[in-house]
Length: 441
Image (cartoon, rainbow, N blue to C red):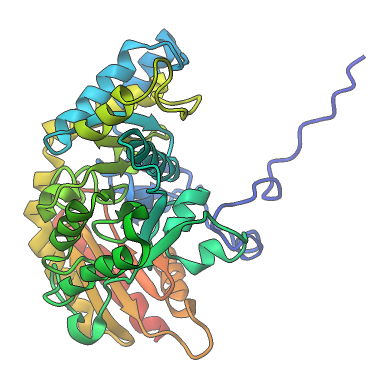
């Protein structure tokens, strides 16, 4: 006798959606059913132009045949293999392809499954490095206000978004924060990197004076994305690098958003001409076709941990799915597309047109700042009295209904389209956004 209950209906109840107003969504659902090229399609077949590359991640556009076929082929060969004391060739190949793109000397690659895991992994590696070189007192981690490093407890602790932290109580101990670099009084409506604010990096010297030689690492985003596109001032990252070098502190870049062509170069470190010791990445690594992240370390960091440890396991850290075969296949195919189609070059070529289009919104009602670098733009709106975030959310909903997907964070509209975007797409994206801003003013 079969005592199995019948399948549950396919309704909206079971899925607890991440970072969502579940109550609102489940009474007003907006669904995506298919994706191709620059667009999503709703279950009814309505096209929605993707102005966000999914979630900053589908840099090569959607439904790329080369990536799909690589995943299918690998699934038929080997679905899974562990990487604890074992290996499979495709994971090593994926690491080599990543190392070809990272800055010279940053070519030791540890695989994770997301940007959040990459952030926590990078912090652990930094602590292991300091201990391996006889600096066990260096246990303090420095982040930055308005920084986002995922949702693990390490990333949240070093990150500087209050809403990510206040619900969960205690974070990691021994964490401090630099001030953010957003200065609209001096830098509003800047095109590219702001002129003012490099001196804010000197706040790291104040933290060194306060904490002494207990600081292990500083983690920053080259361009902060999730808090509304905060572009670093000219000279800021160079000054951070100098202070870190002077004081034996590792510099970690969170390149989850800025990696893989978003700034017109393989990584933000190249565009901004300041190389860190450790880099985190995810999103564009596989074009989001299979979840995967990675941490790339300098040879000095890797060798200190590996050679400075007793015989046996050198780093007590890892994930069941590190270097997963399907994810590795997706990464190899994605990075081949990245090279063959020169996605960073495409981003550089259209960046001037993108910049002018974004800044054409300067006179739209309620727009108080516009920021951009590479194929990223942030359009900041004045908040409504007592209703922070409501104006931008109305813009998001109006754009979606009019066939364009944008992302909002607070009262900032953040744009990050696939790097295959062309001028007609830019015109449609910015035109629809302009109409929405005017309509909800």
